[in-house]
Length: 318
Ligand SMILES: Cc1ncc(COP(=O)(O)O)c(C=O)c1O
Image (cartoon, rainbow, N blue to C red; front, side):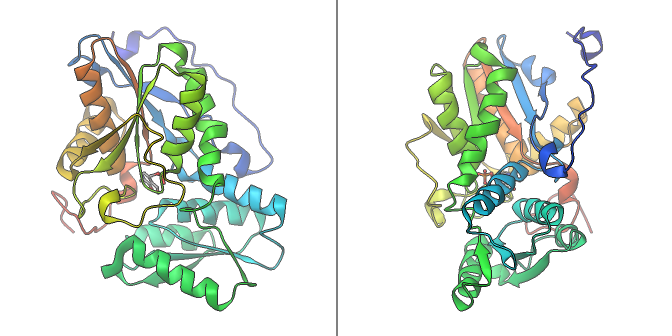
């Protein structure tokens, strides 16, 4: 099938909201036809989380963590929301904080790209830079020190331990995938950073579509260029992470993730980030290994978020 011959009805009415926080979720799913042609009858579905208003999958977790904390009084008037973040969660906190009138402070390794820092500043968030040599784990420790020095001033959102992070995906990502693909789904492949997406979505799918095989994906190297993903063996393990939740764990190396992100942009018009490239590479391997499989993975964010100097650089020159 050529995409131009697709006979589906695309005339979904536009949605109207009172706040951007309600525009999070309900993201579209697109099939990756060029990859499918290299399989034995499999379909590969990509859920476009970059269609969220903050540009990434992290909008879901940030919204849930803030709403739950407001509801049970952990986040009160006068307090500042603080957390450490490799970038996308920071953008999501900054957006939701601006929408709800909540001050936001973000701790990031100083080598996070300049545009990423500029995005959160544009929403009015305060930026605190940690030692780049200590990576995302160093940012976590720096954030904990700041909170320990003034606990009454801060609501420490702590996406690595906050159960509202996976809950967001139990409540939204999982049910959306269920509604969009349904019983024909055979596999999901979900990259792990904090693990919120994988834990919440996998738990939902294992309960509601028990025949679906759920695979968690990590970078194969400790020093990698798949921003947003964690190499668990060499990282601080997030408290919300339970390695027994997925049926299986797979690994993708940086080069393959980057190659797939490049390929997908050129062959499908979907310009995704590198963790998404790794997710798609993982889904492609699964789709090739299982005839007539129906495999879903997610595009965590867009490729243009990485049009800036990074630690891991390949064919871009600056
Ligand atoms: C680009 C990107 N990919 C993947 C992830 C992983 O998502 P999660 O934290 O839900 O495991 C993140 C999280 O920050 C991310 O920013």
